[in-house]
Image (cartoon, rainbow, N blue to C red; front, side, top):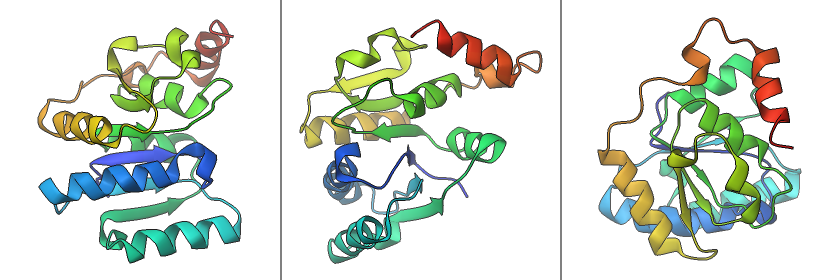
Length: 171
């Protein structure tokens, strides 16, 4: 299933999931058929509250919940999307963002210092924390731009060990 944007992470307020809903409210006013993919799970209470909030805001039809996915299946979801929407408020490293960037997926993120050493800086679109309009503008802009057609994962000579080594050099 193709999505316009995808989030990968825990269903938890600290990860910016409610910020993503605020951005989605703006985006669907301009692009009503917009689909946001959610890859990840949270505890039962957090997940139910999140989905309830989304449904009350009229966004249920715009969200595709994939649940927990790993490996190739997760990367296929990333690669089938137009952008990565990750509005986490706090990150120690940002593994999900790194995975998206390694997939060649442009990302919209809050401007956190931890992201300065990530691979493919040109794919990172930063907005200040809480700037829903700025994030929505970036997401919509990425919908009309041609997504990069290659990623490090398209190179058949690159395996998971090579990717892990690339990520380690940023620690």
